[in-house]
Image (cartoon, rainbow over the protein chains, first blue to last red):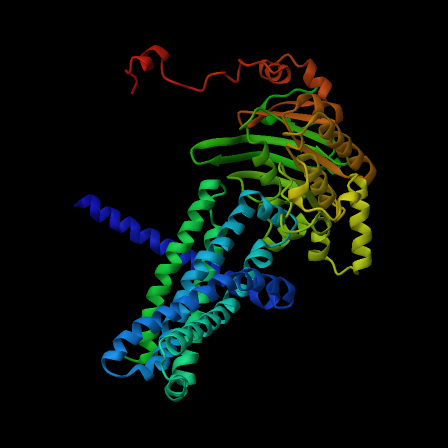
Length: 260
Length: 282
């Protein structure tokens, strides 16, 4: 019993230590952000690496998620004779929840791991030490552009995910299951609110972008400079990002809806 | 011959102004292990100084202390009269602009070409026009014999070429002091000969001060003006390479002649062999 209690205390202590260190790291990153915008090329390259290179997985995933969503929803709605609501249901599910959350999870797996392992390997091969010895701050030169690139890329990717999801839902519902196309789009236009639904989804994906990018660069930068250390940092990036996104999603949803 | 034991090794009769680095009574521990125990040494200006010693003796750690990457537990590291230990972050970065360092593996930025690697410090610290950057980069690459490789990526370079590019990058800002961390490790004889020649030539042609950390006795002896041998956290001998060759101390003889056993034992400390085989050790 004492051992279990001690383990719990140590785990909480570890968590608080990492949380505190990551917040201090975030402060260092934020301090470096204004200067980073003076060198937009570095940021554009990172938007390309984190965003453009993730387009395929995001687009394909969004498309199939939309198709499955339409298929499942059609069968349930058909029982109540409400298949015309398929469009609005798919749009709300995608813009409010599935778009931001699934994109963040996929981002952690594709771009987050790439960021963590790249920075971890830079540490393991003395590239970061080399920069420090050339009087260049690696946080400002390496970490900040990657962080900003991730934060900018995430909402764009979430929007593309939702758009591809809607296309998948339209293909499945309208083309394959013969749902009325006018009702599909009209109900969506009437009931999807730009502020409550679309902007809320963008806000969520922006927050997820901060969390996912911060965890990836933090884990990579602080990884042990060995093959095992980089591997562990990469794994932790995915696990911690997934957990953080799910917890943050609940908190943001509760805040946006105003009820718990 | 100059071969002095321990902390007493530091004073050499040379005036302080002749030395670019003066280290006094340096203590540094990693965990419970003492790496330096009162180490003192001086690095003369404009010369090639070799720091030698068995593996794990703290040679690379010494370079990290000199560059302010880690702080000692006690002691001072004076570089041109300024104590690295007391420098603030901004002062440390200003100081680092005056030094170049060649890492064991080159530490080239893998996402940049050879040209961009050499241009990196210039782009970060100066606002020189692109034409001048190009001129400097090509001059530095020409000096190391790799002007023709300017378009290549680090992954396309051999170990020796990567180190030469790293050397070109290290001298891009025309430093006063250049530090070499095990520059000969893993090189074929031709590449090793090239690096040996470059270290000496760069030092003389550019008026640099060079510190070379190595345990390759033959190569380092051929270019060093002064040599320090470190063991057990202290300087155990210093002088010209010839002085060290003639030194009769057991530690120096073991190191210089590559003897497997001696003051640095062949066996890592272990319990009694027989007892351990019988499973009776604690």
